[in-house]
Length: 65
Image 1 (cartoon, rainbow, N blue to C red):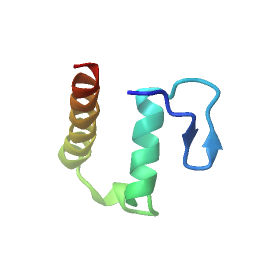
Image 2 (tube, helix red, strand yellow; image 1 turned 45 degrees about the vertical axis):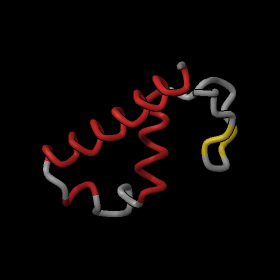
Image 3 (cartoon, rainbow, N blue to C red; image 1 turned 30 degrees about the horizontal axis):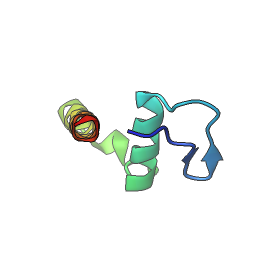
C-alpha cells in the first residue's frame, strides 16, 4: 500500500500506523459518533476492528503480487 500522505484533511508527516487508520475508519464510518461505540458490546467492537485489519492485510497482499 502506498503511504497515505493525508488522512482526511490532516497532513501526515509519516506513514500512518494501524491505529491511525483505525481511528480514521471509525470516524469516517460514523462509528465514533457520540454514543455509537458505547452502545456496542466488546465482541462487536473486536469484530469490526478485526474486519478492518483483514481488509488492510488482503490489500497489502494483492498490491505486493
